Amino acid sequence: MKEKDTIRTKSDVILIGAGIMSATLGVLLKELNPHLTITVLERLDAAARESSNAWNNAGTGHSAFCELNYTIENEDGSIQTKKALQIAESFEISKEFWAYLAGIKQIIDPEDFIHSIPHYSFVWGEENVRFLQKRYAALQQHELFRGLVYTEDKETISQWLPLVMKGRDPNELVAATKMDLGTDVNFGTLTRAMFRYLESFSDVHVHYFEDVKDLERSENGNWHLTSINLQTHEKEHHEAKFVFIGAGGGSLPLLEKSDIPEAEGFGGFPVSGQWLRCKNRNIIKEHFAKVYGKANVGSPPMSVPHLDTRIIEGKKELLFGPYAGFTTKFLKKGSYLDLVKSLEFDNIFPMLSAGMHNLPLTKYLISQALQSHEDRIEALKEYFPEVKSEDWELVVAGQRVQVIKKDEEEGGVLEFGTEVVSSKDGSLAALLGASPGASTSVAIMLEVLSDCFPDEMQTKQWKEKLKIMIPSFGESMKENPDLCSISRKRTEDLLGLQTLVT
Image (cartoon, rainbow, N blue to C red; front, top):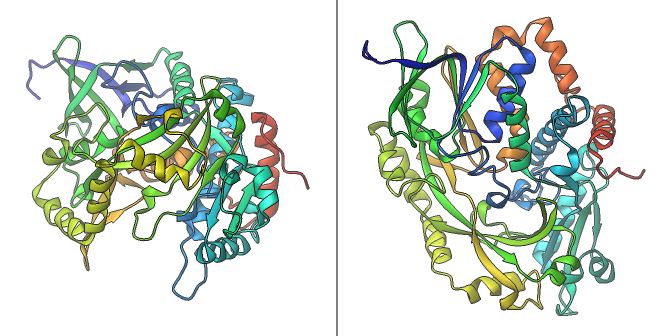
């Protein structure tokens, strides 16, 4: 930084991006240490405009109740449950924190952002039915999945999912699982509520229209950030001891500019998302469920189709998708040059290698991008046999940037999940990746706290406060059924959610 440059903001913490991740980390830090000064830099005009926006994500409240891609079948026919259990527990941790925000802090009314909506898995064909049967048998042994119900009875499924069964071949073999504890979450509303709370503090400042262009270590050990104000077009400077890069698809380019060794070899593969949105209010009234199916053979995990009831701004909606497409943008409101600009000497080989090993994915994305409206309606017919094309319209969802990592054997591998990258000294952390993302935001931010604030995390003050905000902190719901049961009862009461009948 040149001597004539004026620092606009000096703070303990800078959060880049005003989405669910920055909001969660900001509130956690402010609750743990009320004296921290925090600056938030967001390039758009308000919080939750990108991936955290309700129309840009599935809002499922990913808890692995219905998402079949979290339980992969092994070669020997057994079912992997590790990822499903991890995600289910992470979502319970998120609910504990949200219950604290809603019930104790009264930062948000739970009716504004979370609703009980049953989660279903639905499959057809002998092989898929056998898979779902085995999945159910494996999961229902665990307390986190207590209440999961399985059936192959068509009459029962018709009562659960009338749109899905009406007009279907009566001879077709079908099966479904149901979990009444499922939820729909409006992450946009939740994010904005948390930022309103943060902005109520005099030492927390949220700056919109700030496009962060560069960051580097200063001689004093702090981070120096340079941004462009998109309204005045002036260059501005900011300084902080700790920086969190939570800019969604925009995190990778900024992480690369940090030059921390831990960032070497990371790349990103951008994928655009689209939904079919129902325009017929009568159809919307007939369906109250989140129905997830099985991805077609050879399709990537991101292609898992679902017919979703959503509650957005107090209004019931119905979506089907996602339909993917190839893009070079890292953000919905980003640049077509994002992918090219992310290429560096240390990640070119991993990215090319990952591309060579994922040619079917590229082919899939191109085919998705070339689909007509009728092609998309044909895909919907598998879940809604009596669908009418004129009742649905195509809407664009958020961008997802899948993580590409160095790999000694493969050269580079494509990851379908989230990845926290932290500097060795804990002064900087970045979040890369996509789903399940927002649903597991609290568990992910606890990981950031452990990586970047290890000494503070060992203090009595922080441990006691974390126990108040997240009662299961330091324990495992996967390994302690009683803890899981107690936690669920508490969060259901505070959030006004469906209670499991025993």
